[in-house]
Length: 163
Image: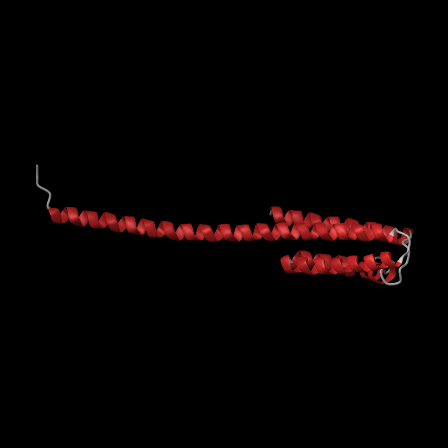
């Protein structure tokens, strides 16, 4: 059997060590990229969760406005409506910061007027919360239609989160 020279063994070991080092470097790069992708995915998941919570808070606040508006007039009722209106506006700002596209939909929902010229700002801020008007069928129907629009925005949030 021929004798193997130690120089060749050493050269072969060096080549294999170089390949192992290269494989380790490639694995480290891929692990780093995977870690970044997981971090981005987690951040998106948290943003989506916060967005959904704030949309649901917006819906709950609007439902509370509707329920409060049906109560008999009192200074406490007017103050509660003003407080709820402030919460509505604050929640809109939070939603805008989490997702500008959904935030624009919420802003449009709040400021857009129906065929009679009513908007959430006009009805909630000025008529119910400002002058203390008692809700009638006209405003009841308006608030129901705006609630339906909010549920549509919530459906958009669900679609965006699941995409």
